Length: 259
Image (cartoon, rainbow, N blue to C red; front, side, top):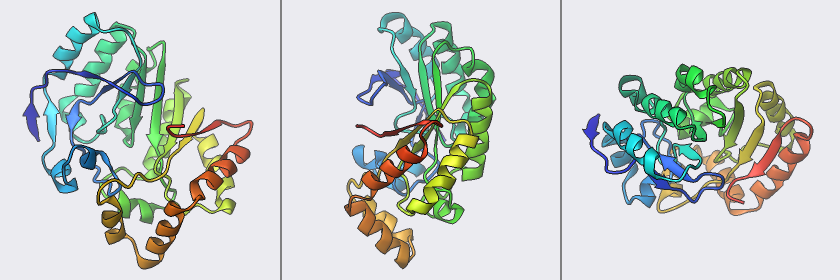
């Protein structure tokens, strides 16, 4: 992985509940076919994965910015996974967490990786902290098609349960929720997520910028391709959101992303 020097650490965020985003890495090794970040940055998926970089000086830059910027919620991360494989070597996320803790800034971590468990002893010291895990499907075959290099769903659920056991606010980001979930499946989803100790579930749909649908269609079997195409274009997500919200009453909160 290439090492680069950054000029800023915290960037203003328009995401709900997030004031700043912190991205210690450029690019992502998970290889999610549906990821829209490369298209926003006018990069190909191959370039996004193949030219990853670690912002080697980001802790030093963050240290300076924390002294001058207005305190706010820091989202870790918006355009990469702060706990992708490179974090094992560089520990940039860990170093940034220690700085944020020192200044008592609120954090909101979203990841697909159980590596976040390494930093539990730090995270639980924050006065305000949330940790979310992206759970897009319970079908490991579908996960392997669209998230080929990401940790398994079982690993994420186990990590989620462990984070929750430490009393940390824990949420599941079902984004994008693969449109394979039927009404009859919602009870199983609710049970699994409740057993993992989530406080909140956020449901999102696919964001088909640029040629993302073409990339998705390349890896899906014909039957799944037809199903996805029909449901993404219809009102599937509105209906399944209502099913989740109804099924989760008394267990956890269910929200729609960006609404």
